[in-house]
Image (cartoon, rainbow, N blue to C red; front, side, top):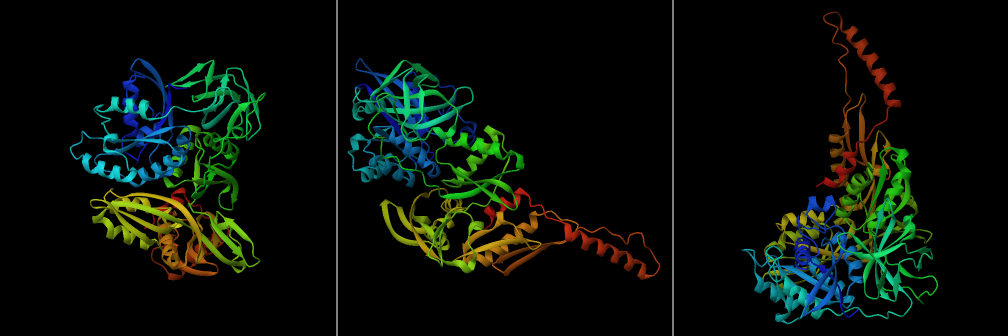
Length: 593
């Protein structure tokens, strides 16, 4: 145990975590680096250049003649995947805080740092990319000292590209990060921090042992679910899984026990022995709170059960995804899914398509509201169609977030305007260092769900960084906006919006749908309505055949007779005609500006 170090790498998105991880693996001869970002093994991660999943890997490092086992977890940096980071932190005793020398401390850096400090992790600050021409290591050092109050000599300057400072990092990990503490003779207590599905071997759970030890062939029990299994194989994680006969206190490894059902493995659960169980589960693991909800429906209704199985397997690998069944008049049976943000939603949709061949329709994303009825009941509503009748509602409360935005002082004006347009309230602003400012706002979560992050990045030329956490529910004047096609409401397009924005939003929605819905043989009326009041209307004109083409010359009554006949046919068609809404129309709502 004295020779084990468990640590993770935390940083803002794009500060070079995965590149530093590559250099560490190379320096310890763990693997040959054949390709950049070796730990990002998903095609999606390689294409987008971001880390989506945390990746655990074991290295062996020799210092002063002693061999140390280093368990490294590389984590994502995007705000939508902060739950991955919190789980990785729970399995570590120390963290490398990586800061880009060209960009300085950003909002997600601070957020991840606080998470690590809450878990009493030893922090090793690293300034990365010091070989860049635009690097400002001295200014960034000032920011780090101000942030964590460490000594300047503790900050390591490194470059993931050239490999400079990598050996210093490895030495600091061994010397400064404490070894795991626990009792090897106590009953087994191991924390599950991740799991993956393998179609041949069932579910593989990754764990860290806090107390006791586990051997191949032991009978184990999962504490929260109460299920019992045989440990068919246990081992450690290198680039591949390497089986071992025994793992003891402080080690990070995996267990294969032939589990087939995805519901039986919960991230944050405790593994213990059946014969000699531990007294209590490992505490301090918070449940994930989804921020954004959207309906996910199979394009082919017969695929419903396949979609359920795919979501369960995906949930194993991505514990921040939640889902429960729902049905829609327009789209049939599907699921209401909870995501941590829009990028998370996009990634889940993409993974369903790539990994499980599921074609799905996703409805307009929204957040959950608290609705209080006149009878004094409180209902949590995730979906506008689940709203009680307008006459029954006493008031509605919506979630507010506390947002922290770090930006260059040149962009304060446009950023304040953006936040105030989104019904935000400025709490305070403070200068971090030089000309960098941290702004704190209270903003309704529903306003930032769709395009806030993209707009923030574009008006600040990519400089501003953003982080948030849910604060409280507040009373709000919200109305349900319905979209009607030929008088029929399309429940998948209905949204809850603020009273002041409703008319403009309804009008833009009708205009957008007019462009996207293909023309039919009859007129299609697109209307936006609040309750029984229509606030906007557009018409998709019918496609008409020129029935009078064969009449040339002669009396006008011949033409009129043909037109009257066509009119009767169109009228009959309209009575039985229904409108197909293309998938593009559901997503178009996100692009409204």
